[in-house]
Image (tube, rainbow, N blue to C red; front, side):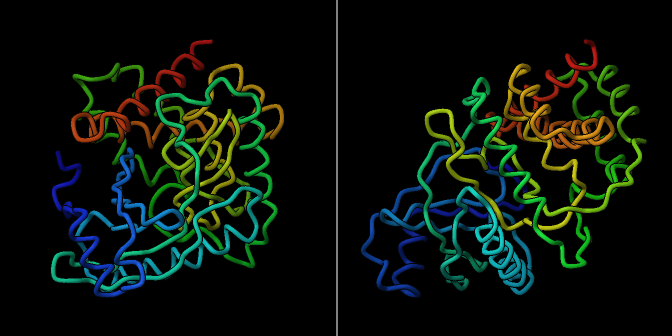
Length: 299
């Protein structure tokens, strides 16, 4: 089932044809579609060491090419400063007869995505994520500030979206309680300056092995944002005890902690209803996070 109305279907024969035409040295490599809860790209593993990433939603190819170049630059910057590996950009492929957009070849990272609550009870994972966030925050923004759409700027800019999500969720969630919680979140002030942030530390972007963080995916959004944004990891990934370990180790202020909770709330409200049928794992993540947030507010 398609996740988006404008979704592009990508198959193994399409990928093989694109590789043979544009990167013939890779045309004979095994190709395997990677099943994940990701919502933006289709991922295919190419041999042992590479992966191809295909944007799923239609838009102007020129705009997409510019976006992929920006993402490649951000991913490279992330890898230079992160204590945990991220995929390295290798090449950008051109549109073909069977696929209308540019696409990306990048390095493959071993590990298992932290979906379905895996790693939630790992103290070591909680501390690894703190190490990651601390390292990213230490990178100089070089005068850059948040200037894009999406999470990481002003919570009030997301009020209309959350109100729509609340309406769409009436048959799925405890909307009165959630609405009251958002009313508390949306007005939270912010005085802290932007810091460098991964921006989307969700389970599908976190690779784990033996309860440790071993890699980080989707690093193309690395850039300046609200310091609270990467705190979404505490709510998406960790159980109550490990979340307290995370909080004690990172030591955010009370306001920053609440804003991190608010960003996780905003993301989760969209995930539950939008992906209810097309991406159950993502929808379940949203439910799990909202339950954690409501339980925390009741304590």
